[in-house]
Length: 286
Ligand code: PZK
Image (cartoon, rainbow, N blue to C red; front, side, top):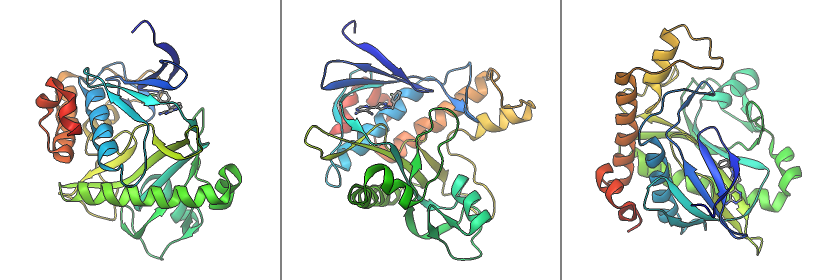
């Protein structure tokens, strides 16, 4: 696509400008673990993530408008509406993990939500909570209080973001739970369109923007294995890798097992065979 102008890179995705109104998002097969992109790719990972986002975009239109204009025939790229992105990440947690668990252990609260005493790691929360975070350009996003978030986007927009984010999470978590996957938490990014309406953007409820846990074997009181990346984490840790760049190459059996987990998540959530998706990505949108 010679008309596409490269305008940005994420760890595993690339972003191109098509014209003043449209961007092209391309998901690669790169995989990051402990925040380092590994030298070995996982074939089809980008297709899985793009397909999952497309699935959710189509099925959550009744909750929130979104930026998706077209899913391209390669299955790994989308044309999207260019937005004015908001400076916060809209995180929703249904379970206590990661930085939410760390905050809770330290303070009994996270992003201003005071939680019941005695919760264990990975425990389901009484209600999903909205825990906004700043977008760090380098390193890790930082959880912020609703007061800090309100300073960044204004109290009215923040209230709308919270309501939309929690509604999207509930929809996704209910759908995933019925198919054997716990959507423990997830991160949404929204922006304004040219009429200052809030529009859902970026990727949605993928294993890269969320914690996916298998329902089978779920047990609070410890960290949970990741549905998709656990074999990679286990392999790289067993090597004694110090989690600094560059990461190690992955052997074929780890690549194959990881690819199979991504495809399993895709097929469980979408109900569409991955081979059918690769043949014709539009099957997802029907
Ligand atoms: C936008 N990113 C994150 C970084 C990626 C994605 N609809 C939009 N309008 C304007 N900007 C963005 C979007 C979206 N989505 C998203 N940065 C800008 C990002 C690197 C690679 F694929």
